Length: 378
Image (cartoon, rainbow, N blue to C red; front, side, top):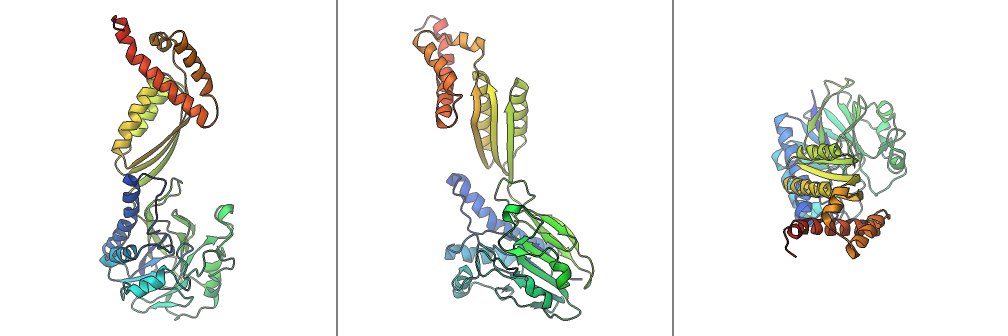
């Protein structure tokens, strides 16, 4: 019974340029560590091969060191690896693949399937039909040749491709690198291993996207997976098991603060995240000055505990309570400034954010000063 791991979209060399260096480096390194985990899973599950459906590298210009580190990360599994090129690492006349070959770092157990021709794994009776991309965007179906591909009669036929199954995925990605939705039937495939969609997704019993093994975006699409595939015999429906491979988990949250219990709920939610969390938080609504200080404290504690926190408070509105305004003991010029800032924070964009930040700073300073004034100290 042939058994293999289906994976894709490693995106080795990806630069997380919108993150601070403190977070960007661990996120990039996690992609190489995911490959090591895949090799370990291949050993644990005693698979016959690991099939990689494109976008092994994130870009053509990765360093030689990164190329070497990638193949070193694969060393834990000495069985067969079959890799195709995707749109990020297309098999151009001069590419990251030709560089890897010149460096002499491609092990003998690794097949770079950069031509549309069968790869026969004789020991296990599997014929892999690869559809490598030779340019970033193609408008013809690179899997069309599968239909007429001749393979040994008793071999399991597995397609390996990178692209978009037409009519299945979102319309905005349903154009370049198209794949016919009935390719499995037309090409008599036992399984079609796909890459490009970064989430784990079943198209039908024989057609799957594995998704990326390490999440790299906030979109909730079930990423951080690989697939263990077992095919009893040619024509049998494969048994597909989802494997968890992620080091970091990405979360996108939106909270609206209107009453005090909303802030309690947000704090409780933030407390649930551990060191493996990458969080994009967007908060809207309004708070008092005291509540804003509590929110800032919670965000600071969370940021220090998890891998990364990006907090967008641009839609927040500060509404100091009557008691807070009274405690500020602001009159004359200060009262005018507070009133002006309260109005200006309603503006859209940087002006509104600047007014809100100024209101927080001024309000906090006045709150800290108030006890001293009450005690008779100027």
